[in-house]
Image (cartoon, rainbow, N blue to C red; front, top):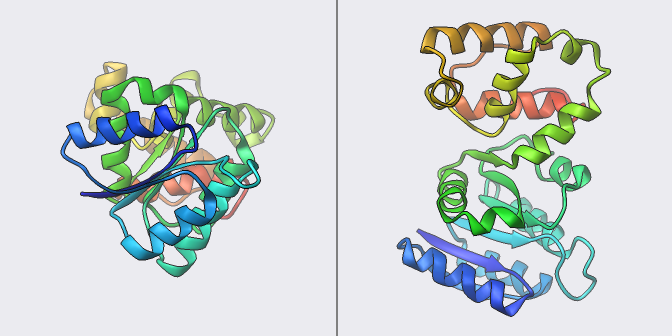
Length: 218
């Protein structure tokens, strides 16, 4: 699996390269600036790009904008964004085109190797990997939204895990629920949020995230 990395901190960049190679990823480019990132993604067309939001030369959202520009040229290009803090605007921009193969993780997650590698693989496979803190913040910002307010505490727990990209089986294991119980909760969630039910794990994640971002579900 071919990976492009963009991170301006040398030690973290080299650490990411070493970690991914130790898990049999082929790191085809490791760059430190936005222009280098865009050129590398268009040249290499990787299976997934792992991208820091803030890169030279502006140290604002250079990495995110390069990733979005690359996805316009290569629709569906899988991108996993790393950020120091939860910034809803960046999560919203990343999800704006309604396609899969996207992730948003806080940089702290990199130090949990298993969790990070799982997220990279999920995004590369066309799935979604959203940081739990991002989901919690989106839910909190929608707390006064009437449909979200109608969810039970257990349904909110299921929704958070669903929005992270977890399958029904994974949600059941985490919450010690049967498959049928998870299925009932997800059906209730979709009904209360006014979303069309879907058996496709990634499509339902995108629908939920679209709702939380205040957009029409894909």
